[in-house]
Length: 503
Image (cartoon, rainbow, N blue to C red):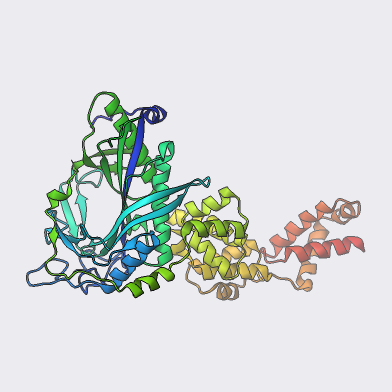
C-alpha cells in the first residue's frame, strides 16, 4: 500500500480547523457479565484461557433470556454522575443488529435513543495547566463482543491472515460507552487534548473503582473521530473513526496523523471517505477499515426481553453525594501537598502511578521516597519484565521499605536487596531483612574494628582530616562499607573516624 501524502502539520492547522469526537468504551469490573450469570473475565481474569468464561446466554443459544446485572447499572450511573451527566428517569435497551464472527447472537444488546446518562461535561487539564471543558453527549450501557485473533499474517491483523480464532470470553462483558459531542477549539493541541481526555476518563473510572481501566488489557478502548473543515466554514467535514487505539501516545499520534492525511486530501481537491480506520503503531499510520455505518444500518429496535429501567431518584442522589474527588482537583491538591515540580508530577501521571504514590504516602512514606521507588527501581524492573510497576509490588510493601530506611534498619543500597527479596516472594520487607540478614550494623564494636583495619591501610587519612581535609574520611568510609558488605551505618562510621582524628 502506497504511503498517503501528508501535509505539514502547521500548514494543515493554518488551512483547516480540526474537530474531534471521542468514544471511550469502559469494561466494568462486575462479578458477572451484563446479562448472564457467567463470571466476568474483566474482574481480574484477563489472562484466562480462551472460551472458559462463556455461558449459554453469552452465546445466544436458543431458549436463553438476558437478565440485567444490577451492579452494572449502579456502576454505570456512578460513572454518568462523575461525568456531570443527568441520569435518565427511564432508559431502555435496544438490539443493534450486525453480523460478525465475534458477535454470536448477530446482534448486540445496547442502548440507543434512551441512554442511562446524558448531557455531561468533563474538565480536562493539559500538561501546562490549560483547561478544556469536553462536552459529553451520552454514556450508555451495552455488552461487549468477543475477540478475534488473526493467524498466519505478518501483522496480526485480518489483512493477510490465513485464519481467525474467536474467543468468546469477552462476549457479554458489561460496557459503558462514553460519547462526546464534537470537540472544538483544540486547534494545534487537538491530539494532546484527545489523549488527555482519555487519561481523565481513566482516572475517573479508577477513582470510582468500577473498572481496572487498563488500556493494554482492553479494559479501556478509544475510537477517535477526526474531521476537518476549511477556516471560516460552519459545516462540519466528513469524519473518519480510528478504532480501538490502545495507548495515550497512540491516540495522540493517530489524531495528528489523520489531521495531516485529511488535510492533504482536501487540499488536493479530494474527498475524505467516511470510514473506520486502523492504527498501526509500528508505522505510525492509519489504514482503511470499512465504510462507516450509520444508525439506520444497524436496524435498532427495542430489546423485547428486557423491561425499561426506572432508577429510584433517592438512590441516584445517594450515588451523587458519594462521588470521589474529581481527578483534576485531586491532581492539583496532591501536587501542592507533595511539593513536586510540574515535570516531576507529570512524570508520575504519565507513568500511571499517581494512585500508587498517593497510597504509599497515605501509609506513611514521604512523597519523595514513594516517587523514588515507583518511578525508579520498580519502573526499571517492570520495564525489563514488560509489566506495570503495580504488577510487582503494593503501596504497603513500598511504604514498609521506606519505613525501614527511616528507622535506620537498612540503607538505600540494602533496601534494594530487600525489594529484590520481596519481588522474589520471600515475604514482607521486614521478613526479608531478617531472613537475609540485611540489617545495618550500627554497633560501635564491629564498626571500630573495621575502621581500625581501614586506617591501618591508609595511615595518612587522620593527618589529612586534622589538617582540615575532612573529605579524606570518604576513602575510609568506602573501605569500611566494602568490608562490611554495605551493612555499616555510614553516618556512624563517619562520626567514629572524626572522633579518632580529634584524639
